[in-house]
Image 1: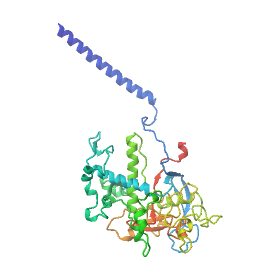
Image 2: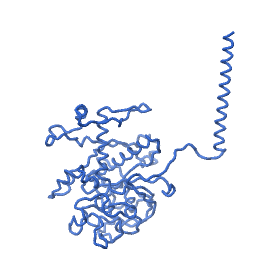
Image 3: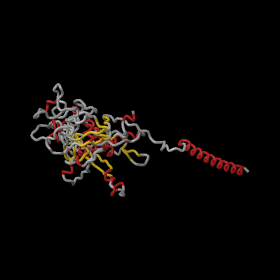
Image 4: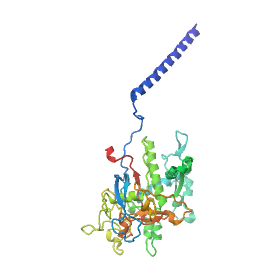
Length: 431
């Protein structure tokens, strides 16, 4: 009898559960229908998005301007004919990337290699392994130092018995997607992996560039001190080739996105090198047909003060207040708030250099890129430089002047700054 009642109770509970499930399903469907009210409202549980100025960057609004020389083309090279183009809004670093900022990248790569060698990993929710940055590396501890021995120079390579990191071991590995190749109609049917490119880049600056760039010139103190000494922390980093600058932008993107992912925030666009005319548009500071970021046509203000770091006269290097480079925020900024868009160091852009590029490039965000291969001839490795440097004459400081350097060359007068495309019509939409 007891078992009979127990069976009845169980059957009753099952029926009650079915009714409850049906009621809940009906309620959920009804709730969805009431939420949308039968209207096309889009997906409602989308993440929020608000554009913010990344630290150290300024907003450059969308606009149209005329590229090319604002004065006579003295070389008659016809490499920069006047043409009207339009540029989408973007962010740009207000200064060139400094030694201390690039050192953050170098230290991150060094620490990441150390963590891998010390087996400092944690397991993700997906079952994958990633570096556990909560671990601390004790570089001076005998146990850790023994495990990290491969990162240092051999005893035969040591100088005055100093145990130093072998900078050639500091290699950054990253992937990027070749969107231009993927967009070609002939490639549409190919698998996605076809367009994923992998890069391995030695990222330590070429400090010997200070000596290699100048024959019969005593620059050894700059080689020994410029990148690591605190006196030069806020000076633009140099000795960085085009591949290293691109690797820095990729690391900066990863560093920011890792933070956003850990805090449940929406990912943004990638940091990158500015393309040639994006750089020129920002350099002009909203001024039309001005030869320099401050207007012009002169290199001095009314008081006779030089307005940029370059090579005055026939070589009076210290006349402008510097000798080699100066602080990245020296002199007055242009009307967009950008420092040293002329002088101090020339800057890498993402654009490949072609003499006749102006004759065939698009008038909307013109961007000519070429993925350099090691086997390519030297001509194909040319990348556009802009802005002129501390060792250049005034002509190369003009906003419309363009020059080039090989992508695998590192120079003591070439640095870079990053750009970031603005997502949306205008920043005023979010204010």
